[in-house]
Picture 1 (tube, helix red, strand yellow):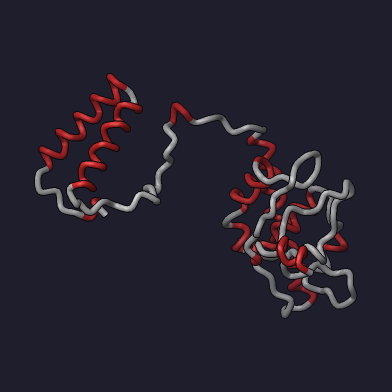
Picture 2 (picture 1 turned 135 degrees about the horizontal axis):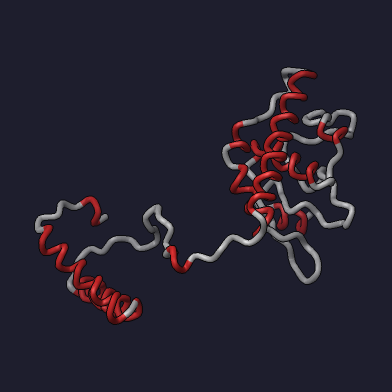
Length: 206
């Protein structure tokens, strides 16, 4: 990648950047895009090895002035997230008090709780009302957080949480959410989760 190449002429590099900055300021992004595309085409025609364009730097590619506000109440969502995190840890700790062999992961969900909560609150949809529904593949070790979210929503009871990883009697919650063993909500909307991305196809074949 060009970022690893040594800049043999910083002054010339800055002149190119200044020129592009001027185009952006006075002629707009479309003109800059046109010029860059033509420069890239010219380089390819001349046999210059071009960088692969499928990845971008680890920066927000949306400029600050074009960012849209986050919908919803962030204070409420923060409180809900705190409740979910607390209950996720409690599920594993309670199971450990019954039998240390039951195990369970705590840090996996705690470190990614915000990402999952944003998905639940603003992106993922359940099936119904003209929606096909999303098939979401959750990393298995975050299961306590998914169960905790279901508990906060009233989809799971405390008794069910107390039976985490205790499925022998038929009333326990499995280590990882699975479509055949996880309950649905009172409105009959299935949980938007699956143990494997291929579950949809497996079910149709079977």
